[in-house]
Image (cartoon, rainbow, N blue to C red; front, side, top):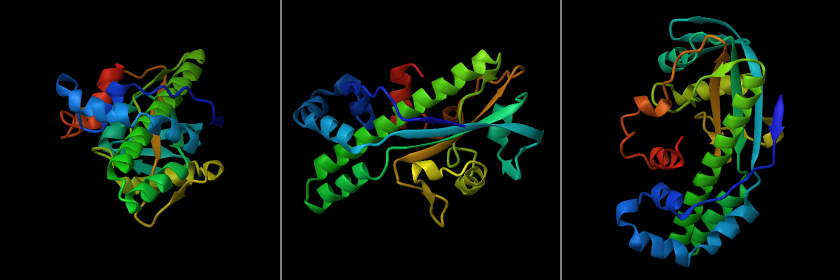
Length: 230
């Protein structure tokens, strides 16, 4: 089991424009707003407490859309196609903690809607960046063992029901991160996410979760990942 708490979070203006739904080809107005509110980046970095928990589990077997890990049966055609040939599954939880979303709520109550919107967007970029670094850490460790890695996929993404989150939670309970699960299987704090990927010597899939999403041409998160070359 690994716990990560040290991250390099350098947010570019272009990433924030895209995450907030802007277009880099016509971004003068958005850029002016972001520059005027750039101090919110400093505010966000003071509020977040980024942490990642991850572990590696033997895959007992894959049977059609069902993936058997520990005492759980994960079910997703996309997940099973991603990790065909994998010997292990890496499961990870990551969070920014609750303070950033608490401050977003304060801004909303004070009528500072632009500040709230921007702070929330900054938080989403931060969460994506620590997710990237968590994935890279797992890939590097797998490489040292001579293993390949699939792309990550999360419950709630296209082709994997969010209710499967509870099964992931049962395998790797993220107590150290103070993450909890709601009755509707959403992670709390809100700026938290989990993902699963396969590792093995015989992996061949190059698919990504975004490839199956009907919103992959308009999704702000996808546009940020494309900008980052991920």
